[in-house]
Image 1: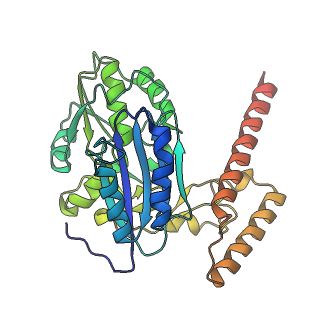
Image 2: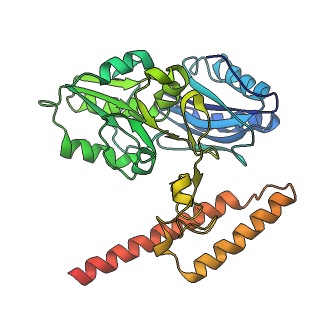
Image 3: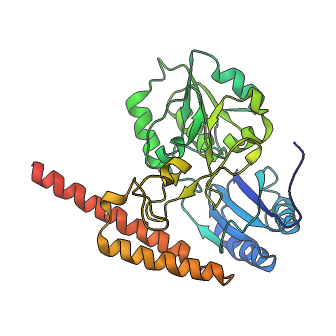
Amino acid sequence: MAETHEISDYKVAALYHFVTLEDFEALRGPITEFCDARGIKGTLLLANEGINGTVAGSVEAIDELIAYFKAGNIFKNRFAGLDVKYSYSTKPPFLRMKVKLKQEIVTLRAPEANPNEQVGTYLNPEEWNEIISDPEMVVIDTRNDYEVDIGTFKGAVDPKTKSFTEFKDWVSDNLDPEKDKKVAMFCTGGIRCEKASSYMMAHGFEEVYHLKGGILRYLEEQPEEESLWEGGCFVFDERVAVGHDLVPQDFLLCHACRQPLSVEDRADPLYELGVQCAYCATTKTDAERERARERQKQMVLAASSGLAHLGDEATIAAERQRQLKKENKEKQRRKKNIG
């Protein structure tokens, strides 16, 4: 598909590659310096099993970064097979550049799942349509429940997981390699389903497929009139969700609970920009609402002054952690009362 973007647009690169990186800790500094020098923002994860992340910057800067990764220099050609998906945004999708060191580039906590040793069969978008139309195929969405809520492939199974680490328990409870002979999986960019395919094969599933490049590549390459995708695809940046040709859709994130909100969700009487939505309104205290309103006020003032509200990302994360702690305490209280 031809690129259609303005000169002023930001180029977004979602990338990953499973490859053994015994020196991954030493790569953090050079990568950070390279990105900072070119104004690139976003997050990259480095682990012994490879690299994963999404970054954005000028077209020239992102092109230089990908060329840097694929060169022989400090990476010793280990990123030659880097999987990259591009899209564009008219505003900066990220506020900072972060390179993080991790145990895994996509957390499953299952050592037997090692894509560097075994992985399922890759399928391009055209092959994918044919495979998932097989009535004997079990098609699984490996993403989390809030992602599936706004879009998925027709007929796909939703494991209703809150995090990818729950996927292995769902497989144990719901699938049997003796009965479920054919399995096809997909995710946003291809990384989760690639690791999931390795996990499935380690547990005796033999005919395992996964969508190469994930939903993003499918939406970019597959003609809409031939598409089996329904709804929007959640992305982990300020665009929130994209559709065919990776065109941003009309979704916003609730700053309180990170739930993607459609136009209909934002029309709900309980929705208040920057404060709460119908999904989390009943869990908020008056004090929390007032703090959120003050924060939203500061963001509006910063925007009107042409300044980025640099505390926004950290505040959202902190608020989410407080909310999770509150929910866990409430669950424990209910269990205690029932007992």
